[in-house]
Length: 198
Image: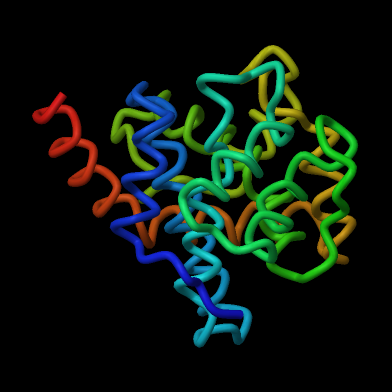
């Protein structure tokens, strides 16, 4: 799988349709998370591709929340994104706002980790460190069980995501914490630069 779009182009495309720091941070976090997973699961050669899918996965969400994953193909094509990447991006909304099924391992990871990064990120903000660096699986499990906490993060999608991968939830939690740790500093630095420019 070749990414025909550079990271600079992908970031520019993302920022064309997303201005909210919350959405930019989420995109950067999922980008870093997907890169870690590619490296970890033996897809090192495809790490840029996985990361770009992560970066662009919510491209249409800020401007077109009611048409999430429906509007994405048009926006992505206008930025020169290939059809295979469009398929991957739309698959993370499977049975929620898209009928594109996650098939490749990368698509299954995106489906499982997208919502979970939101839950872990919200849990991290509750910690004195405001960081995932000292986050533990048991803390995530506790927050996962508390339906009122980060209520927008679908537990059903996270459960289904783990099932699609043949992993148990603890496994998915642990790996995603490690993935988020791997990119947290970079994301924070990029966000400082982004907010200074805005």
